[in-house]
Image (cartoon, rainbow, N blue to C red):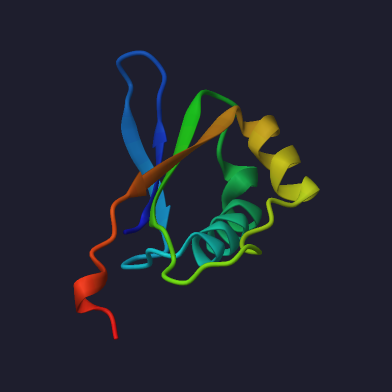
Length: 96
């Protein structure tokens, strides 16, 4: 599921971008969101935004995973962007 990035201000709700198309693993999505933010943050005015990350729990996960860097936190704060973590169930029957 892509990371959806949208304006969440008043009646002006609308998608401003997305990244990680067809990706469901949180570590990859966090990394790609950080790269998207580094590339695009200078052209987005401060406002009220959401980066909604839809992810599934990794089969056999035993810790580790994504790191939200201090630089990413600064960019999120500068933009006025919150991160929503939307966890979806996982059907392990189709995974080898």
